[in-house]
Image (cartoon, rainbow over all chains, first blue to last red; front, side, top):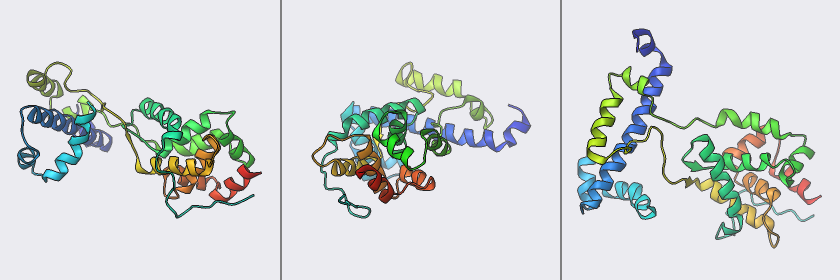
Length: 66
Length: 178
């Protein structure tokens, strides 16, 4: 990736989108593993820095459908 | 004809089961675009793909072609976010290295390049289908009912696009009723 390309908003924006997808994928993997290991939603919420409700709402339903 | 205007009221239908075929067809459109939800934009695509359907007929009578709808819709359909290794490299992130480590912990293929998983149904799409069932009454839900259903949810993306083309709920209802 050249210096010029990294100043291109297009590349920058695609970088942001890439990070977001990566973040979501990593969060899902980590949360699923923690749940499989028997962690409570509260235990998962603390290191994520979000509320117990937020993490449960986001990941609770997906789990059931798997 | 009797006008059944429900622009601001909530739908009476409690389940969208009678309109499920539209949900499935919409999900197919969403998947094709790489989206992870079904919205009214996907339902509208379903309607205009059915060139023999009642919705395209109603739109045609209102002077709006299926192509015009598709053209108006296209800029509203974002592409699905995906991981672009080059864009990450521009930030100094080696995606191959990230993938390698994640696969060490979670197994091969743990990290998809694009979002997968089950599709969600956008609240407005659900509302639109419930309205479609209301519009259908005792009849089986067809394309025209779904068109009216979408127009009944005035802040839906489909309703916005249709309004921009000059299609209002009132005009569509009058045409359906003719």
